[in-house]
Structure formats: structure tokens, C-alpha cells
Amino acid sequence: RISERRLRKPEAATEHHLAALELDAHTPLALQELKRLLVAQQRWSDLVAAYESEATLSTDTQVQALAYRNMAHVLSARLGDRDQAVAALERASQLSRKDVATLEELARLYMEGERFPLAASALERLAAAIDAPAERVGVLQRLGDLFNRADGDARTAVRWYEAALTLQPAHAPALRALDALYAQLGNWRALATMYIAQAAADIDSKRRADALVRAADLY
Image (cartoon, rainbow, N blue to C red; front, side, top):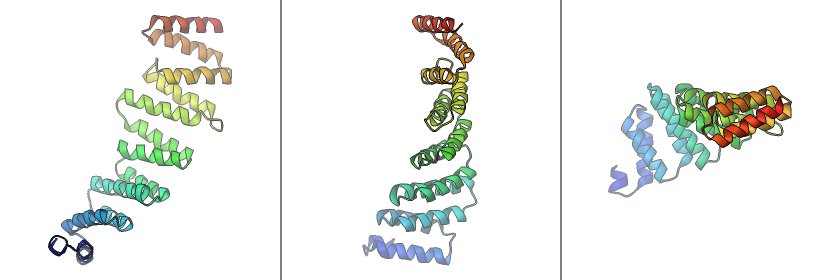
């Protein structure tokens, strides 16, 4: 760090670290210092290359996955390259399949790019990666919402909303969506069954009574 600290030439320090890595790519201190300097100098493309080197050189899958995730952040937030960011996140996901943060970011970027089938795939993987039922319900709801569009697939939306209700029978957003979808599809038996299940699961007496009345009206 002499060039940076004493000579106050961070650009020269950066070049020295790059030269050190060319001589010996397995110099961890040089790589860590290089990343710090590149951030300070806002040399984003070079930072992406540094993360690529880190992922390539490491034999630790968690280190590799983190490097690709950091690379994706730079590509997306600093360079505006959504496609390359997605590619980096997919590599991270292959290395750490249950990493929730990676899958959340993948789903977000796919949605931003209106790549809905790929967004659905990312959300499905996210739902499978989450162990807590209360958190998984929210992802299943998002999957239902993804397909519950004018150009979507109503039957697939129903499947995901129903999956949410298997975990949380009184989940209000899924119930509201299914209320409309069952009517749209003319599936009155399923609608009546849903009302009965809602009445059994809800703790509010007024909502339970309303659900039973709605079920009765369908018979």
C-alpha cells in the first residue's frame, strides 16, 4: 500500500496489484486490496473482472457463489447490464442452490425485464429453498400473481394460490384471488369448498359466518 498511503497514488497502487496478480493469481491479499481500490476509483468493469478471477481461482463453492453475486450487483447497479447480471446470478445459484438472496435478486431482475417464465422458475426455486411456511406462503402468492395477469394462465395461477392456502388456509390475498378466478373459470364446487375451508380456518366469527353464507349460496 506504499503507493496509495505514502505517495498518495491509488491508481499506481491499483496497477501494482494487477501486476502482482498477473505474476501469481493466487495472491489473496493482492486480490482483496485490488477490489477495495477498484471500488474507491469506481472502475466497475475492472471490478467485475476481479470478481470473475476470485470465483475462478477459489475452490470453495460458497466463496465462488458470493463472488458471482457481488459481480451481479456491480453489473446491475453500476453498469446497467441486466442480462450479464442475471447470468452471474444463475452461476451463483448453481453453486448455492438454496441461497435465498440470490434467488430473490434473480426473480427481481427477471420481472424487471418482463421475462416472466424465467421469473416463475426463479420464484419456484425460491419457494423450494425457504423452510419457514409463513415465508413460503408469500412466494407462492407471488407466483399466483405472476400468472394472474391478462396475458397469463388462470389455471396455473389457481394452482399456486391453492398451494398457498395449503400452508395458510385463511391467507386473505390468495382467498380474494381465488374467489375471482374460480368464478371466472366456472368452478363453483371449488369455490364452495374454499369458502367452507375458510370458515373452518378463520378465527373471526363474522368472517366465518360470511364464508358459510357464500358457500350456501352456491348449493
